Amino acid sequence: MLVRDYLMRNREIWPERIAYISETARLGWGEVADRSSRLAAALQGLGIGKGDVVASMSYDSHEVVELWYACSLIGAIRAGINPRYAPAEVEHLLTDSNARVLLVEGGDCEQTFDRVKAGPADLTVIGFGRHQRTYDYEQVLASAIGDPVLPVLGVDDILALSYTTGTTGLPKGALWRQGGVIESLVKSWMQTGVQPDDVYLHCLPAAGVPVCWLTHNVVNGSRVVIQRKFSAAGALELIEAERVTSVGWVPTMMLDVLSELAATPRDISSLRLVVYGTAPATPALVRQASQALGCQMQQWYGSTEGTLGCYAILSWEDHREALNGKPEILSSSGRPTLHCEVRILDDDLQPVEPGQAGNICVRSATLMAGYHNRPEETAAVLRDGWLMTGDLGILDSDGYLRIVDRKNFMIITGSYNVYPIVVENVLADHRSVHELCVFGIPDERWGEAVCAVVVPAADVTDHDALRAELVTLARDRLAKFEVPKRIDFVDELPRGTTGKLLKRLVRDEYWEKKDIV
Image (cartoon, rainbow, N blue to C red; front, side, top):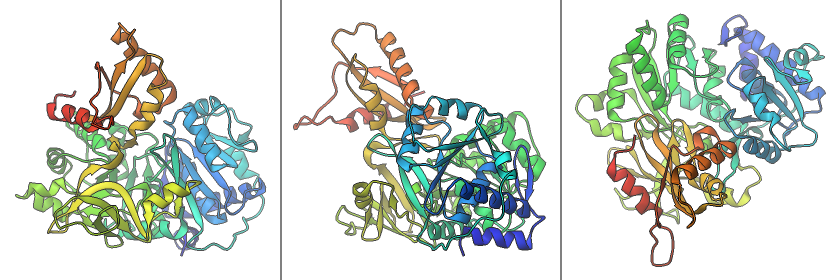
């Protein structure tokens, strides 16, 4: 069965069961399927067929859900665009994907799109909410004629392009297969213990991987409550009002929720499970959350290239053992999942010595088909059936996976990945920057913060003025989460005997100080 098969099954057997609750609608499975089918028919009326890309740029809503299912019906490829992306990044995604249709939300998203200078020549834009586009989403659905024509689809057909920031400085699209999505939805969520009567609160931006969190309920008919944009107070209100039983957060969200809950107590007794991931959570935070929330907790480790198909899970049993005398377990990412084979290999795909660090490599039916339009980068990470995750880790004698470093100095700030070269390429354009390096530094709230260490040009005398100009430059050309939170100036950067910049030495000095606020 593919995604569309599960959707049609739910329409038949649970037409009245509430599937999604958004800010503006409460939709049963029958209505979700009907609206998605009308959208699919409308897209075909616009010339969209199997393999054509349909993009969306919005905060989370039931329209995002309907577009996902519409693409699954007709074999179109859904590409999500993070609403926090800068116009240049939006332009790249539209051009790289060769999107034929863009669904855009009025307000901030539409304003960002209006600043895009170029894109596919034949792009049709459909607006929803309070927008200024010619095509209106609800009118498009209302004018759809007949049912969509369902093409033959197989497990290797592409359902989605999920973009992730690449080391070349531009987002790259992971091609998700129809079969990989279902493998991920069924087997990842099976291991959470989610049941058909569960109510899941969705708080994470569904432009990328979290779209699988948003639509996981198609496999068991459970309910998803959609929070358009995360706020701790709003999340707690929804948990109380909708009797939410499970939720997915990143550590910074948990911090906000705990602070809000302490200030304004809520009835969250319905909450059974909190799944957290995308960035490390400190043992202290886990203990605090476990006590305050009074529910089970799981940590997931995965990546975009795995179609959410989590590679390792730190189970509730692991958490209990850690909280009852084995705190070292909380420094791990858990044990490999049922559907993923995880090994620690060297650069030649040979096993490293037990207890030694090496490349975290994964083999699974959830793995992407490759990167869109990037054969060389695909070949570098998909090798002999293995995904080279880019993370370095250790599998200990008890089977726990411990991440010890990240290749290419990738920064995880909140729930977002930032590659230093992206930021470096922008800041280096400033005429007063002689040399620089960018890396992550400790941040109590975000886990890591983006830091730039700059060697200014010889004629620079006012560091404060240059710092302000660099921040302005970054805000104009980068996503908000990529803008440096700290910019320091030095006379020179350390180099090795070959002249190579020793970024690790600079970064390690900041981590050793542990005085970053």
